[in-house]
Length: 290
Image (cartoon, rainbow, N blue to C red; front, top):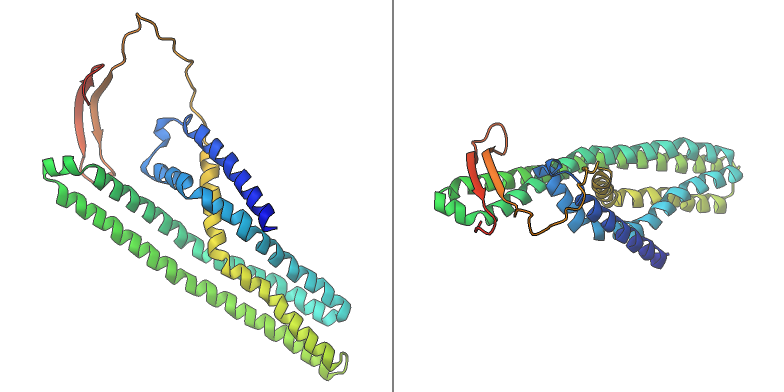
């Protein structure tokens, strides 16, 4: 199964990388905001290994963990309809608690991802513009902006860690209630003589096996959520509308060389920050130095 998972994962990786590379060359430049550029960079750099890891390492345990409790619930009806009803009642409860715990963490995870994307952009920008910053004596303001991005990312990570506590607590409480209900039903059946002592011991083991897959899924929750975010990034890039592509130009000896002209170019990062560029006008003639 692991070998098949790796083959499927690498085949999916190869297909998605070709689709992303082809789509990025056709997306209009106006689409590439700072946030989307960071998202595309993450999809290209870390999306591949995570995608293969999800298919090869997570998909098989997830399928097994999803099917085993349902199979045990059906099997308990053949042993005792009372145990089967108890398992059927607790199954949606524990699944709901697991999904709720994942959703609680999802919001904090999205904020953490966005904060770290902004931090990456700030650090790369600060490193690339060192010469210009030193020449204009703006190193300290730029460093403070990078420091603010670090503080924001640290706070988002702390919130992500704190948001995991209520989700884990909710899942733990529901798991204990499920264990008490199933074990109590088994004990009551044994006391009434409806099942023998050996059967009761075997059923206790089955009850533990009933809860074990959910514990596995809870442990894989972080990895699954990370994989979900990767699939969303890839899907966002692949499904983005492409720009109309002009036909191939045929160059000739009479075709003038292209030039780049900036007219009243103004830029700032957001509405509260000061302008980095303000009414810039210049022309880059063919063959001139940048």
